[in-house]
Amino acid sequence: MQNDLNTFRRISILLLFLAVFVGSGCKEEGEKSLGTEAITFKKEGELSVLDAETDSTLISLDIEIASTDYEVQTGLMYREEMADQQGMLFVFEEEAPHSFYMKNTLIPLDILFIDRELTIVNIHRDAQPLNEAGIPSGGPVQYVLEVKAGMSDRWGLEVGDRILYKKLP
Image (cartoon, rainbow, N blue to C red; front, side):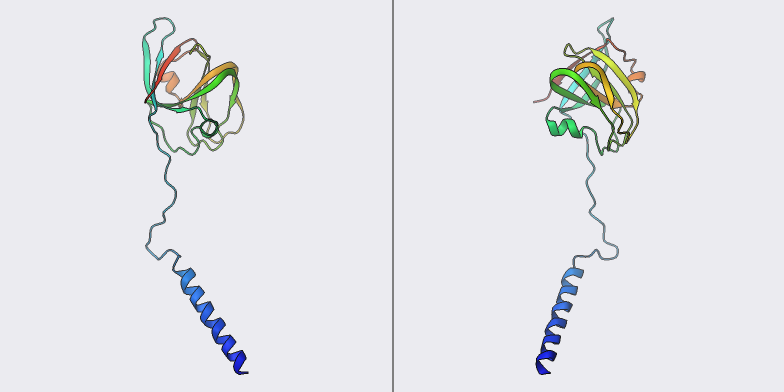
């Protein structure tokens, strides 16, 4: 009987200790939750779009550059905003047909498909957030530029216009 009582006391003390220990990790009333940090723009280069007929600069942008498999697969996913003068340039090793989708992408985009000669060969306007349908390049491309939806019309971009870009050191 005495052994049962001692065992009961030990278990009770252990349970009380666990309750205090586990409870100390819980959020107190009024404490802020840490949450996740928003993904923000990181300027990695500069890009200009040149008019096909006049060779004049239509727009200059700050760009992020996606060239690794991870960067290409992630793209602009989970971003909540992007400034008008920003974009993401995807750079592929070789020219080939490519397809993009908007999985986990929260902002509407214009997607510009660009060949190895740096000429815009296709523009997909207003790609809708979270849509997993494929958006094909329409032919072989080596670069893809994503900008905020509506910007390609605002800037007057057309198939045949060219880009120039430089990566920052």
